[in-house]
Image 1: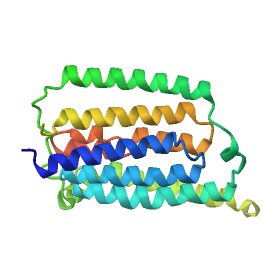
Image 2 (image 1 turned 180 degrees about the horizontal axis):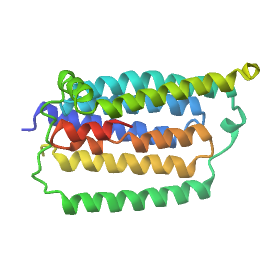
Image 3 (image 1 turned 90 degrees about the horizontal axis):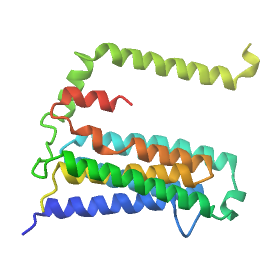
Image 4 (image 1 turned 90 degrees about the vertical axis):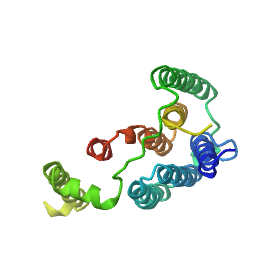
Length: 170
Length: 60
């Protein structure tokens, strides 16, 4: 008798893969906005997978940052640039064929190596200390230098973006 | 069958190749970016036994 969480894993994994496929090759729509919406769904079902791994913080950040912030930026840019002729253009058959072939090859070799190297009985070692408190302690104690370097990097990027948009500043 | 490390890794591998398909097959720059997001987003690297090694994969 399979447990409920097992069924949940299969459902979420299937949904993730389905939505991922619809992100890249939607047979009904070639609009990048549709792709972005399906990417949001992919990310949300992936967050469900993280919850199954007891990585609650990661799941929350996944939804907040990816499904929230990153996708909003994506949609902003897509709608600002307003690429209409892309929707009328059909898929390039050769590109889809070659891409499918290379994706199949990569998937085959990755799955084969996983099957070969990972014992089937290996349990999904959930992150025992995956809670926010432990993560925060780690970030601000042992990894504080890379963390601060990253914040400086983000500040530099922000200042650079402002400098680029304001041309008359110079 | 109870999903173990195997299952998660295989889902990640399939998701990665889907992202690759998006990068190769689509012409639209944004969809290519989305394919890249898909490739970088795979849960593979979150598997290390201790949190200490997990943070390195989170610092994308």
